[in-house]
Length: 121
Length: 121
DNA sequence: TGAATATATGAACAAGTGCTCATATATCAT
DNA sequence: ATGATATATGAGCACTTGTTCATATATTCA
Figure 1 (cartoon, rainbow over the protein chains, first blue to last red):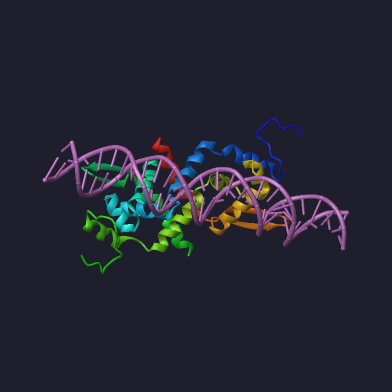
Figure 2 (figure 1 turned 90 degrees about the horizontal axis):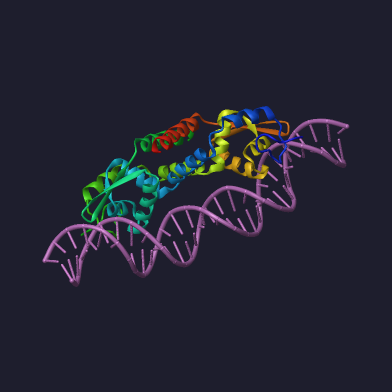
């Protein structure tokens, strides 16, 4: 009845041993949070489309807007999100800002997920 | 000046050639949508924690609730989302429902992303 | 310097999401 | 059948998010 170990729960526990074992192996709360944040960035159609486009070629903001049928503002806002997530990088050439993928993992995560989608159907 | 091909845009286009080339290689709109939907499921701390836990061991609802410090209801709602996304499966044993990962891709997508997070810092 | 242009950003609003609470369903035990 | 228990689910609410609109910033060119 004493609870001096890990944060207890108000719910009935059926398999204390399993819970204890899994609890030990759980990564730091912060890491799982970061992981979710990372996936959250991919969890939007617009951003996925932008990422795919950039996986094909470096592009400037207005090209992306045209390609995807979005306003310049919408693209710019989303690129900011992608920038913060360090998924894209940019270089400035005069008035034009060119964006490209910042990381090789992006492509592989992408492909892995795409494969899952395919096989699921 | 005529626009009889692909859906045009109201934005200035700087590199028509690039846009045209990338447009050709864009996957079906639906596939990118599905991809985003897939990632959206991973884009929540609670679900990521559930998925990680299940990657360690099959668990029942109340064990998960206890482990993660959530209400039974919250866990159940999220499991429904994971079920719909076909990321987890379940088997019933009397009153207890056991959940487990439904797909090997889950782990690999997870690991790939985790690796990205690590290297990023 | 001043006009033009490419991009960035803030505010606001509609739509979506995850939790809680109450309650329904399903199964077991008596 | 009745009560206990494990899970599922609907409604409601606070919070988040993606877009639009207006405007700011930055760079080029004349």
